[in-house]
Length: 290
Figure: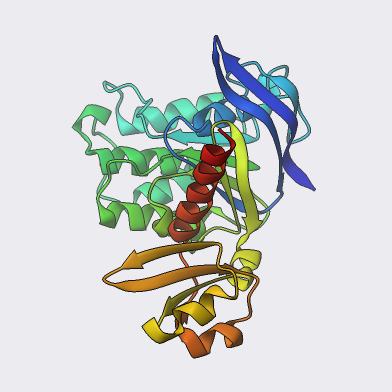
């Protein structure tokens, strides 16, 4: 069963095409990493999914058209952005009271149990909290809502390493139960690699690449080739190459590890490695076409 399904999704702002015929499908119980450079269309896509902006094409989120049925959709969707949305004058206890009053699926005991594991005081005002604490407060409020879809847009932007690690650990241990669906965008892709089930690259409003983490780990291999073996490794047709400290590093798609092992050291690449390769090849292809 799909939580999000889009066909020919398009969004233009005057002369700028932010989404250009996007097709995607996100199954229930998956964690999707949506990755792309600034201005690629990530936030626009999320805004369409959340019903915040109109769009062209077909988009179905939890069985609903998000633009036409946003009120109903918000019963089953939660959202955390990189920008704090809680009023700075509000006390922590008031934030809990407010969400309890407006959301029928909010469990106050869950929110209070999460906050009890932090250093956040119920009497503190939002303006008195650090950025990390504000993010923890957001997460506590969101995790206490029995939602089917959680959308995270750069949720840990500006946080230090410890807070980022705690955020994703809490997300996995206290929220994700393999029935909920999570969509997350971030520039710190290495930090989310271990929690994702799927990844998708978006570039200039188009989906440039999409696969599950299972396929990623089985298909892609990076070889650090020994100098005398570079020519033999090239014969196996790498999809990307780079030089580092005088060594040749080659990325392969669908080449068995035992065929590459005699030529040097092999490893599973990072998402960042594959992202650079895919985007580099796209830019090269666009340059040739031009």
